[in-house]
Image (cartoon, rainbow, N blue to C red; front, top):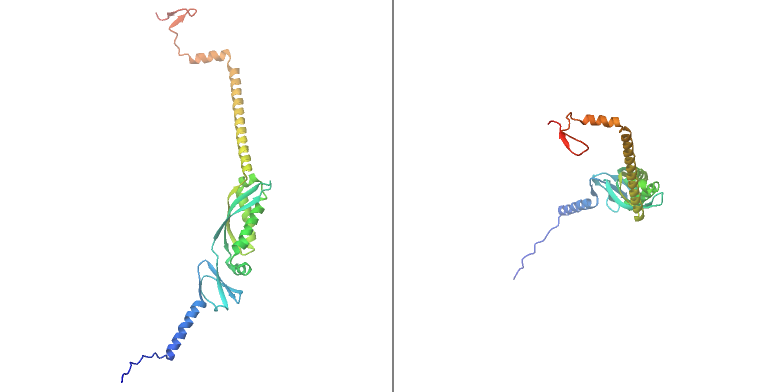
Length: 256
């Protein structure tokens, strides 16, 4: 009679079961409870959808989802650059390019997340930056926007700083890259500059002519016969002429 070889059996023991359970718990813990917050971020902890805590960079342990969730928010300095259109107080249309440096205030990151979530740039920063630029530009005429750019920048910086501070965002700096005006205004400015240059040249020519006229007048009053005789004596080298002409016809040498 043929006996088939026996199939090896795998016997599950209690120690092996407990080992599997422990490994599964470790994996579950690492996946759902263990988090690392990177440098430059803060972690917003929500419990059943409500903001309950926030943590700085490092390792943290939280309750598993869906009990708790973690959202990282960047608190490093960021840059936003955009074009803003406004009207000056002399009703000129002005388009400016504005660069804003800002960062999320770490202490109030939880409040920002509760109010607007992570999309605070488009919901807070962009509209308030446009509003601040328009309000600032409207206080100056077009020429002042060019000649007083540092003053305009300072005013816009104060405006946006005050607005964003109340919403948990800190402003680190603002610069107005350029102002663009309509073609008609640019032509008017160019014509004005040319007219000013021509006026300055005409004034210079007039002053030069007046000075030359005064110099000629002074010279004419000083050219008396005695003055001319004195100048001739000053230029004489002490030698008598070698030829003396009579009525300009011929001359006789004086030393022969």
